[in-house]
Image 1 (tube, rainbow, N blue to C red):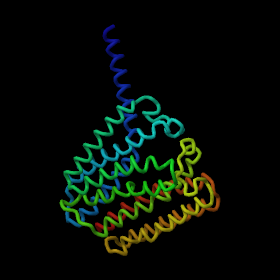
Image 2 (tube, helix red, strand yellow; image 1 turned 180 degrees about the vertical axis):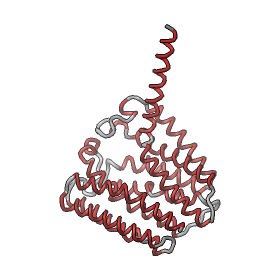
Image 3 (spheres, rainbow, N blue to C red; image 1 turned 90 degrees about the vertical axis):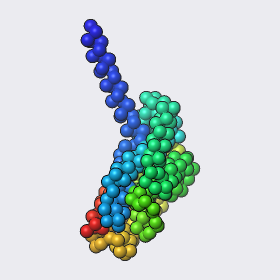
Image 4 (cartoon, helix red, strand yellow; image 1 turned 135 degrees about the horizontal axis):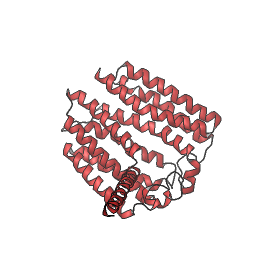
Length: 304
């Protein structure tokens, strides 16, 4: 009998452990966090090329610190939006609105991640730590509440969203100095976010309206919103050519960025013509491909 009870307790504990891990992944938005860390890591390796070698301990600290900082920002975002998340089909199963995690528990986890992540990045250099802290504050406490106020929220959110390349680049140096390289890395990610988020906002417009989010340029699925999305994809083509123009990227990145940029434009203009969710979904999936592929090609083109 005792063995049966013991086995039951073990099963319950494993189930609780599995639920916590699943809820923790949802709290920190694991896939988004990995994308942010990936972007910072690539920029770190690009900066390391200038130094002539890679400091893998610093890279590891950047990866861990960046993961914690991003997880903290996402955690604060979910705490602030807990009541709104209950209204949307996409988010109602998150740990806080579903009741599987209390606000206090999420707050403690987010604070611990934010403090530990910032301290780790501060060990690399002051600028990296300050940028990381700034990204948390801007994302969680400026961008998050602005989503219900005005479509300008996408513009506000593009700043913390484009900071990972800066953080990753500066993390490679003991005493960071401003140059064209991190600025261009920032610009590519900054401009990319507009078609990316507007496509997502188009696909999820009905769900977003339940929470009062106003993210499309005209606040609705119309030709004006589609036109803004198309113009933003057009801007990506000259921005994607900046690495080659400024001399730290070769011809491979120029060719790849132009091809991907044209593909991006084609899907966005198709959205302008059809004004449907299926076309917006194509723009969204294209955005998922564009940024990591451009960053990887830039890394290896730069190394070559």
